[in-house]
Amino acid sequence: MNQLFSQGHACIVGVGGDLPITVKDAVGIADILKDPERCAYPPEQVHVLTKEQAKREDVLAALDRLAQSAKPDSTVIVYFSGHGYQVVSTTGEKYFLMCFGYDKNKLYKTAISGEEFADKLRAIPAKKLLVLLDCCHAGGLADTKSLGYEVEKAPLPPEAQALFGEGKGRVVIASSQADERSIILKGRPYSEFTLALIEALAGKGASQKDGYVRVVNLALHAREVVPRRTKNCKHPQHPILNFEKADNFILAYYAGGEFEPKGLPFESEPDIESEPGELNPEQERAIEVNQKKITQSGNQNIVIGHGRDINIQH
Image (cartoon, rainbow, N blue to C red; front, side, top):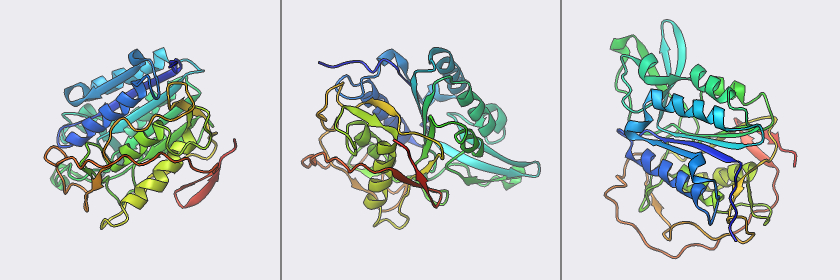
């Protein structure tokens, strides 16, 4: 009999605009979190913001509501899929998450700065917080030199990196290294990074067959499969993990409270594009193949991030 993972809360953002895949990614993550056969989060505790609902004020308000509804014993997931930029001007460097309808002439009023984002996360009282950022997509801001600043894609707000060094229940995972881009899948409406997350939330990579998805198992699964699946691309993709004091906390159920994984919530195994932005997932034909048997990884306790090993205590 399925059980609710009642302590689970989530804010899921897919900006859309010039990145339609981000909407599908956000919906895919939200759907598996709410799936009573898998993660079993209470549906009313999973808030999804896409397209016009993902403007700056909407995202900030959703994070405020999350801070009010979550409790210290809650488990919270914040997922953002869109553009992320490090902006360099004569006044210094600033990081921005680009919300729906952002205006490059008014970034402070239409995008969310790294400081604002970190402040909103800091206000969430949950002792178990996972932030997932898929911010290195193809396209985005055109030449901005005439506006007095330059931009470069960046996977992680520096302020968030500092925040997630403060406590062992706070983890941030980004989709790719700073010089890489998120790769879109051919035949399925998900990016490579999001597919790996959905697989892990369905039980792939679980080190223990006890019904729970743990944060390190999710991170290890993404770290393993994303580089492997993109190794033949011109620029392979490598997710990054940034935490030094985190424990291997529980994120969700993977089978509604049961022990046996129930597989992925879709039946096809996608091919991948050879270059980021090469394929339009709206136009690609789905390639139907048999679903691969779910396998369980060994009990690993080392993750790699920023060129160093990080020991995780169980």
